[in-house]
Length: 248
Image (cartoon, rainbow, N blue to C red; front, side, top):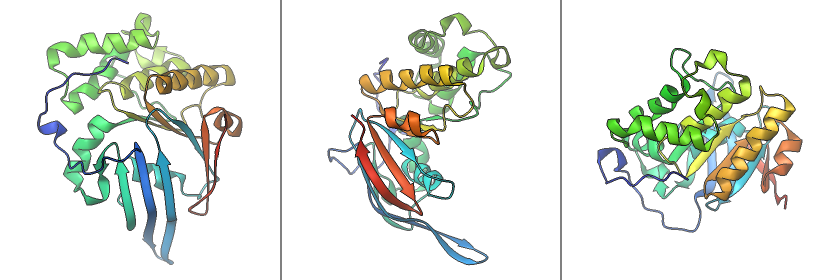
């Protein structure tokens, strides 16, 4: 799916020490936070292995550790203990600058509230991710952004402002933006939370298509029915993985 053929540059220089079989490999991850009431352990020895091209859902009640798990996989936060290998990088051995560079190429983020810039058109929002990544030459960014929107069947709305698009259309543009730098992993945090059931179904099928084309999808959701439609479901409770099963 619209792969990038890029030469190594400073933005792609990261510490990569993991050559195992998994795209995501979390080993005994613990995360503690200091609070006025004392230390709070958000994750309590989580093990999670995900192969490339897998589509998994992550479910759990509020406070189960879902947000902390997202922060671990995306490198937003570091574990108190444990090892994290994601997209070939040994995150627990990297500094903030290295992780920031790595994240721009390895992770595509999709949020519940779309987070499109309202003053930019759809195609400009997609291009913005390329501006941050600095992997695609400036002269090629408009064409690549249009190619991605065409792949998402949103080319007719490329020059529309987000406020004129439906919720579902905005989410598709947000997914297109997450693909701007061709990351191997898409992290979707409640991506259908603001969508009606029919539109949510369309967005889900789009994730399925991305997984079939080799992307690794991790979707955090409160929708148990939608979670069951992913190939695999991880259930969190009180900072622990309490269930991990294949759905098909």
